[in-house]
Image 1: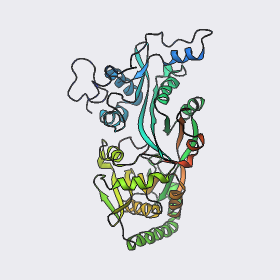
Image 2: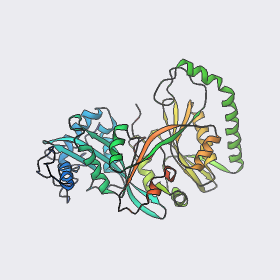
Image 3: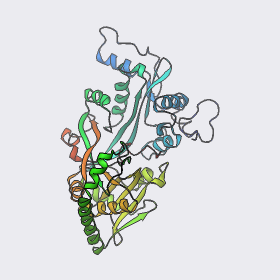
Image 4: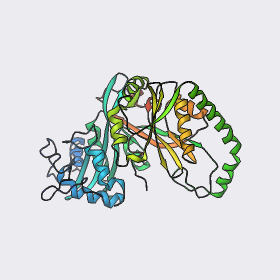
Length: 410
């Protein structure tokens, strides 16, 4: 582990301390000396209560480095990716949407120590013909001693005031209740589609979580005839794709060919995060572990019809991200199945939204399972219609959104 992330703020900055000089003299970053952690005085109005709750909260500054590093390690663990400085730099120093002078981490101090943090991954969302600044809320953590004392809502309120649109994926039940009270819209669970590729063996963990029990392994062997039929369907789709001149080409890095694809696909989705070259190069090519991603273009001749990014976790291959022109989902997912089968994976998993993707996945034998919980908050002055933001089917989501895919391999 390097020392470049939650960098040291004492003495001269070491050469690798990339955050040491950030936020010096940034307007609005001064902390108040107002009494902290006290309940509002009797008769105090809502504005006074809000000011008291937000006291001691500011954006991350260089002098927060050591204290925040200790806070993160104590609550997430020394081996967590949140405590890994490579991931810190990638998410907050190298992110193309984060100005170097304004990292998207809010820190709460009480009684002179860090007791909470709220981080965010900014992105731009295409909403109809408009491009809206947005952010994924991530890594909300409050010291147990200070929970239920207004720290968490005050931290999240700072984030919600920073961007017109804020969303979160994989939100825990306790946080959902607080977000709902603050006006967030609960959009339910995003479906993950799973396709079994071979009978399971007892002890395997194809979903990356619970090992398969002997009874489940036996039941999966009974599905062999069904798997054979699905493999036949998959082969027919691939054969038709080859006859149509389609190719599934492995690429080392994303390039300019993805820009026309993004320009053509973006208007077909009501709400979709930017997936042009700038975003994809940061998300996959510049990631701390770029070698874990298998990237492909679906092409016909010189034209890119779509792309897919795969990653293996234990016995499961995951479709981390995917994008394609309307009408080509079937070919894209069939090629993903072929790659997962060649790699010896037990299953292929894909988080997807939208009717076209869902129809193609179901036709190829994928079964839907409940995925991460999704919530969103549109600022009242954002101009975004509640009917647009509050309809789950309007959102284009994959495992690449938010931080669902950030944990490194064990």
